[in-house]
Length: 453
Image (tube, rainbow, N blue to C red; front, side, top):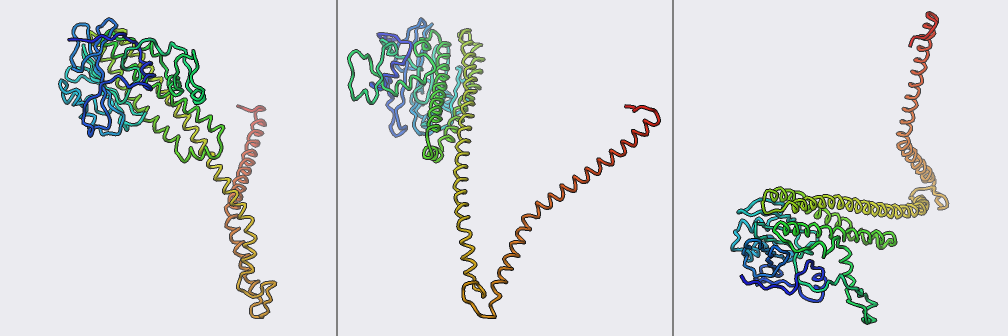
């Protein structure tokens, strides 16, 4: 097997993250039918010598010999396509030597961890829409000398790429709109874009320190699970930063901003995304302990890597608690917005009631003088047959008002009467008990001279 050694072997890919804005990613695209999937399937293949070095290799799905082991990674595009389309793409890429049951175990949704055709297969695929940033799919097929992984979209820090001098060790100049107008100054070092700097601030891991080249398959399995947990942590941190900025906007903003957030249903959508994230974390809590249990019985799985898996499981549980705290914050903010909306509605109703108070006397006056009866004052009606019509109508209106007042006051009067009767009965009972108690006490004292307790 002929291998082409890279000029330099790196232990992190932050530089690759930064260079993605200027150069194309170092993947070899598959020549698939464009009508099958809206995007290109990317693949990477490495071989590790077991001494801390790795090399790029051809896509032959062969296993390593001796201490050597191979890693084949397939990256499905994050586009809205059916699950069957993803399975067809994996069949084109991995068959042969993999069989249909191997493909289905890697691409299906839901948590899974079992031995399939002599290999350990585990997956944490969430059933959400593939284009969502909160849909995560990662599956792996592990043997003693090879690992095959499938992910949805790019997982940060998962792969390996050669790099020279690290960009993180340089003194950068942040590119901003004002900086672009002034031009680049001499001696300012490298220039990174502002949104790239914001992305680096959301990472909760050190790229160079946490991405060593694996020396065994067990190291590689720990690396794959570690990058998955780091990816979840990065998304949670980004969500926390977004939530903090939204809270500041709400504190400074006015009516228009709050109304826009309510109309856009921003916080209910965030809660829905959190539920998807919690589902992925729950899948990891269910699968990774079983992976640790099954790997602990393998002779080629190191003990320190078992401990590393236990630490990653603990990180995942703490991450779940953190997501729960974020969900409580979002619920509290949404409750505050609902309360604010209720206050706005109450204010509008108050203004409407005030207007009704103003126009109510006017409507009464117009109603009185608009009646088609005789005897209305200041109308000049002198017909003796109709002169008592106005008085009769007024008596009828007063009777209706009295009936309505009785209807409204009757429950209050009835409750007051019932409370008075209960209070009177309690006082009467207390006085009778007091008299009987004093009578018994005085009788005992007269007979014995003291009160027996």
